[in-house]
Amino acid sequence: MTDHVEFATPSLIEGLLSFWRSTGTQRYGYLLGRYEAYDKVPMGIKAVVEAIHEPPQEPHADGITIGFPWEEKAKVEALASACGLQVVGIVYSDLTQDTSSDEAQKVGKVLAKRHANSFFLSSLEVLFSAHLQRQYPTNSRFSMTGQFSSRFVTCVVSGDIEGQISVESYQVSDQAMAMVESDMVEASVDPGVVRVKEEGPERYIPDVFYRYKNKYGLEVKDNAKPCFPVEYLIVNVRS
Image 1 (cartoon, rainbow, N blue to C red):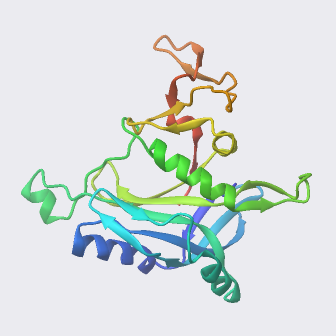
Image 2: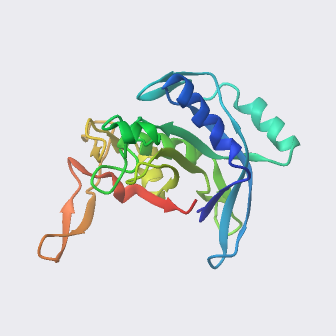
């Protein structure tokens, strides 16, 4: 896993912000960089981003339409490798100007859409990140397959609770990647929950449980069918 994401220069994110400010629509890109030791935690790893490649995309005010699988993947990865870099993650914006008051507009505040009472990554975003993380596994000599987990990160440029623009970084858990690989889960119309798929002739769905504390402070185990909170599949990464 990755413990920290570091952008080599603020201008990398400024490019995404300039696009949003001029068009009012969102932008998406692949992070090109390298992994280094992170001395803030024992045996820590950080992703240092040196460049952002923005593939062909159709921007919208509330999202982005992109081609998937990534058509230019081999070409961009070869060019990055020649520069000593690799694909370490993705970044996209989710920004909406705060128009609640003249003062908010004057200072350039944005809406805080992602927080503890809403969601940090939607169920659709988690599944998308899980697909990408599976494409970039980490080489490990301690694994029987030679690969284990992933260091691929997902960065979101959005508004914080104070209305300021911030970059938050995440990974999805190994359990999330395994569920996607087994075709067990799907996105929900509620961005804060993940649906467990129905079992069928060609799909076996084992019992899935999750734990939480109820209003009395007692730990409760509950069945994840038909759905469960998306935050159980997300890992926070410092940025």
